[in-house]
Length: 157
Image (cartoon, rainbow, N blue to C red):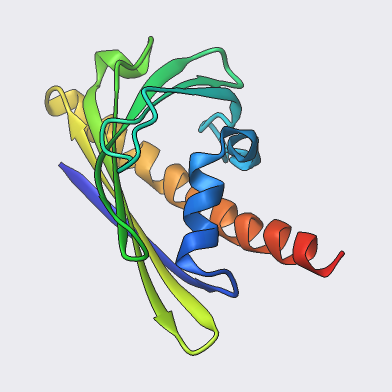
């Protein structure tokens, strides 16, 4: 397993951040980085009241696809997603990814930790995923900054 975490602060509340995550119209803001594709579109199905089991079908800008399923949700504190059903070529090197969002409110800011666990299928997959994780970490950092900026600007207009 390959792990990494990206941390930042945001002027948005945990509630506002989670609203963005569950609103698939915002998913296109994930632009990718280097060989990591951005998200072209996403659709949600099986949206449950407690969010557990909610499934997102994702199509990326390179035409690859995957599914993200909510496997943990504690309002205002934590959101955990499992990414799997990868299309080629990722399905040849990875079984699944776990993405965890953790939120902590400090004064008028929210501390965000977004961590990933990448699960390779084999030794070669682990080498490739280590390289991919470098680019994915940068893509995630850029996305967190953009999420905060977009919502902050929307509130000001």
